[in-house]
Length: 268
Image 1 (cartoon, rainbow, N blue to C red):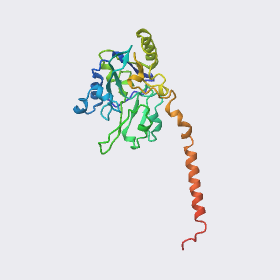
Image 2 (cartoon, rainbow, N blue to C red):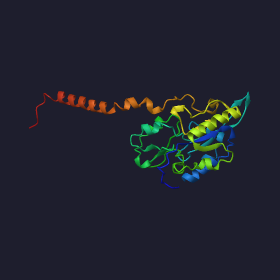
Image 3 (cartoon, one colour):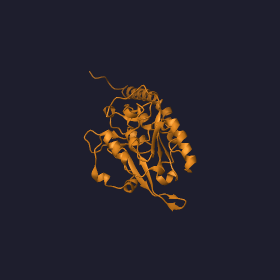
Image 4 (cartoon, rainbow, N blue to C red):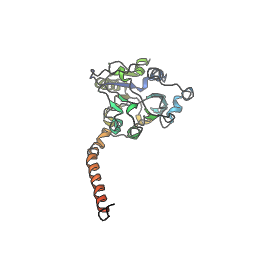
């Protein structure tokens, strides 16, 4: 895996996930591990997609950047099986980037949100800020870091599909420019009678990963209660006040020090 990122390509990419087309083969999970050189835990992988879907973290771990979860929603009153690929959504205006004062998280113009552990101070504010709870911490390591899908940034920056998309046998994953994917998603919704909702088009200001489905997203445990405003927009106004608050607080402390010590005799 090359570490060089092409900075000349300014196209904005994304991935469209057509949920009804996914058969749960987990080829994407394997490709993710191979490309990113993630360790393999056979005990963890022995769990079924349904078992992982019942877990709060939806099967994502520090060394599991993508997971396939099985749900059993109802369609026309009858239970059906639906597999859902889960990974970092790569928000257009990421809360993790905004929350990271050490600049360990960066948003690339091509779409991926990447992480540089060498800049991380381990505060984990990014984990608190993430609206989708996809960031995981390496609790078992002496020098831990935060882990998540990097959207195969070196590949995407060169216009090459991420590893997961390149191996999908059913066409459940489609890589392309985000605006073109939105148009394709709307076409598929109309042609296939899907739910008239593209998850990721507007959620938290929009995400690079877009989902379409033939059953309501709530029944697939998507966070449908999130805002349509970018998460950082809620804190930008307050962040601008930080220097003012810092200087003001320093002045107040200095004044209190002078007042409390004005009657003390100087040491000889």
